[in-house]
Length: 385
Image (cartoon, rainbow, N blue to C red; front, side):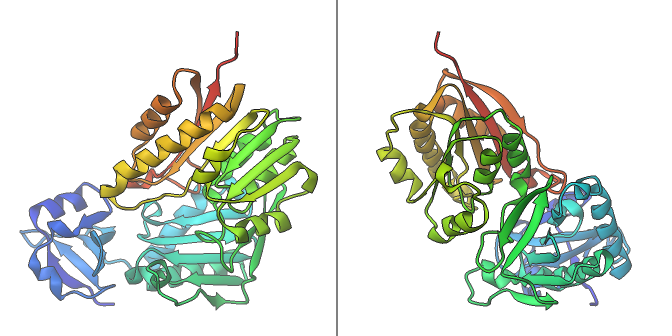
């Protein structure tokens, strides 16, 4: 593709030179209106110096995703070098699991491109229509490099509400993909699951719970989705596991793939907010996990989301027994880490002490501030004296 020249205003040029991957629409001149979705742009400053190359987006707040900096245009050799660097970062991780995010968008130098591996299948998705060609190329290159027979492509259009379904880019992707983490078998719902099929970014939480001393514990898992956390606490020895989610499909998937002893599990299909208000257990829980969906990608909605968090934690905190653990998770970059911690801490009160703050997994590197979306905090309820 031949790049089209675009002269950046001073503010936008500063973004490129400051190594941020996004140029927002409100920093562009009207000259950008001639570009189409997916156009490759040669980005120049006021002195006609080439600062880099980017992919144009016709809609949304992000207008240009910076692909490569400097005067050399991105080519196949350059993309493969980015892929090799991404694989090298994950070398240690791939020794323990074949459920891995191989490419994490801008943080791996390939804007809007996400490629996950689930055993013998890659799931490739783009956050924008303009990056779909790059996504297809990267996924095919990785499949060849790693000898992976199947690729499922999730079109960006689907993310915007289109009816266009995922399609096979290579081989015959299964409806259910299987993979392991530290020898533990898991399944991903490729036919109709969230994200690329499941939440690889929660691996650290699953590991922490699986290795925790939970023999005989009572666990409440809110927004449980497909039950991978439920499997982790069952393996740790929990004797009572209540999993609540609004999706019947997700809970059916949990029952089919992530439960060993059904007698230990109670699966509840309900609106978590409503269920919490009515739930009054006779015995409190040793562990309560609160992991709601993002709830917003809009900055203007943040106050409403924070109000929702407060409602959740006001209801969840009393369900934790003394010396028990409350796990609080947030998966939107719109709410910064410090604000999330402050909101939860103030809501649950002085009866809890923060015990841990899980770091992002190595296959979800944080290359710029907006990539720091996942926060997982552990709060210990103080013992009764």
